[in-house]
Length: 472
Image (cartoon, rainbow, N blue to C red; front, side):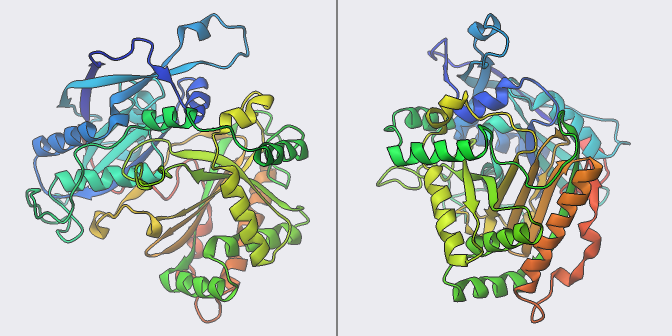
């Protein structure tokens, strides 16, 4: 593991600045295991000194990696139940060194999970770590973990791209060989990119959301009885978080996704509204009512004249909206998606202020759509980037549709109760069957790999390859 040392930035405001709405909610829950996200990727055969230097250059490039969060002292004397006030502060990196973690005999997935649980937490100084796993065949895998306050899925790909670029690897260079980054390197990076803290302050300066948006949110909250949308089928007793169950299903291979996109084109929509149509159909088949789900949307839209301002930045550039639809007509689903994106185009805190922020909702249901093929961040295929998942306890249901160049996967996380295993398992199987049915029999699903659909308690299939020791 590469251990960095930090200090307050000279001239920084001693009180820092207000954290974002999502950062405040996340950090307000305090230090706990599983608050992080991480990515693993293959790196070229270079020395640890060079890897450490590349990581320092990544930190220098990203202002977000030079910020930390603290709890505002006023929160400590606030009445019980009051929201935690969180501030963000600028720091500088004063040094760094490699440190060995583990004795080489343990599964690196366990070692990494324990390491990230201890260090990649909301108030870490800093709340990120870069590690290297050495394998028996001489290859190495880098794993970067950071607390969710400082990153999202898009950010993970940015970190991989930047690390490889500073190691002299680009799309045309390949991970197996290494060249010095020079003027004719296939990847050229700006020396620095804006910090997520700048994005938060920019949101604070935006005009108040129009009345129609505020009224729409009021209707959504009224329909939910003052709570966020919940999974429409029974989950059993989720009065307290339960151990998680994670299912990862290979839905369609690349040819299947291409066929599905053709179906969407014929229906006059893109792929996401077609998938929403399937979700509505499944709800109807299971007598689960209309589709209502929390729907994360990205907030990286830059100002006029600089739409890509935040595209290369690291941070939690996600805001939550709500997706509602009761019609399986793809055109109606397209309108519902547009409506949800519009709702998520305004700062969330003022909109949810009447409900004290986002209400804690046992059984909350969230849907995420991540099409990595469309992101403006390109990573060499030979790097084999993988999300590395924390183990958590949960009381809600989260479903991710993830598209890569090799196809579509559905990842579902839910509480480990007998009822949830039955209802969520049935729901996800129906979703997969209906998506496949749109393109079958002409195109099948990833070779019909039903072994990938089983429930996986605790760990997921998105883990770090190899079982060798870790080099820190």
